[in-house]
Image (cartoon, rainbow, N blue to C red; front, top):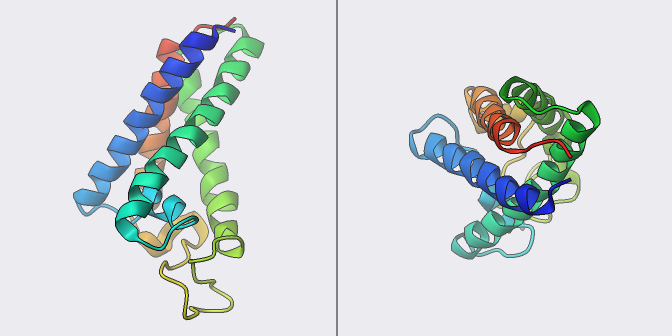
Length: 158
């Protein structure tokens, strides 16, 4: 595996995903502010949380890029369409497993079962993150497909 390519292209793909997600949020297509969600794991201040969350998201993106690179290596090929398929799988797991479980560990996120507490500042995402808007699942799929396409185009199997 080309470690320098993984590090660089994982960063490029994560920045592309994050930029597309933030653009969709600013365009009113979703209320999901993932850097805020991640950053409020460690700080209550929303402005600091967005900065911290952005860097947390970059680190998580690098981890997923490593998984994509390993999968491309196992398949002995990397293409834009295989990357896009991995992106669909990635977002499927994120929307159906990871985000719905987040209220169980997030100190500042309300739970759908327990409701808001005095320290909760974020609503729970719900299944497919629909609590952040009906277009959120579509936005999430598009940005993760972009991520996969970028990695499929740039990474070469080892």
